[in-house]
Length: 134
Length: 134
Image (cartoon, rainbow over all chains, first blue to last red; front, side, top):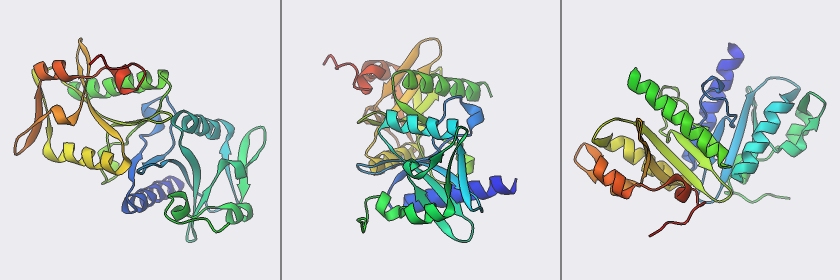
């Protein structure tokens, strides 16, 4: 329950951040209400189509089930949207991660915190409001 | 409760229809869970960004509160999305309506069934899969 609440709070925080930056944002209804998978948050800008799967984990790695990740990838393929795994590390902040930076095992996609710190993208860069430095 | 269930069933039906036609679809979480307004359904195609506010009413008119309609219009303005009011008339089918076809009073936007029948757009036209005949 603690993890659930942390996740819900993190989502809410991200929704408001995206809204304040001028995006239209929607939070997906719980998976019980529909059999079709969709990312936790979808944010639309004038040209951008963004999808976020949100996780609030205090851990040295983050993992997603194969099915969970690949359903999100299919969703984004259909909608021509960019997918980010949004990892909220309690008391540290957000890491926005491309699926390509995850390793794949037969059961999971995972990334270490070290690699997440290295490969995470800033929200402002994702939103196209700040150029990448690379 | 009957009206609620009809509305939820209608939404589910539309989600599956959009999904079957190749779109990425998300159903917005209930308004209790976030203070930010968003349309009931958001559907993304390769280039399309569509938002649907769904109503299942068996009546000779359809009305939306001023705030409800204008919040959806603002959402779509931010996200550069097309807004449709999706009116499911029980045992008759769907009418997809542009906000511009509604009349405005100090408290409501409304449209008669007659005008809805006249101005409703087919889903296939909205999705860009069939040219309009006009």
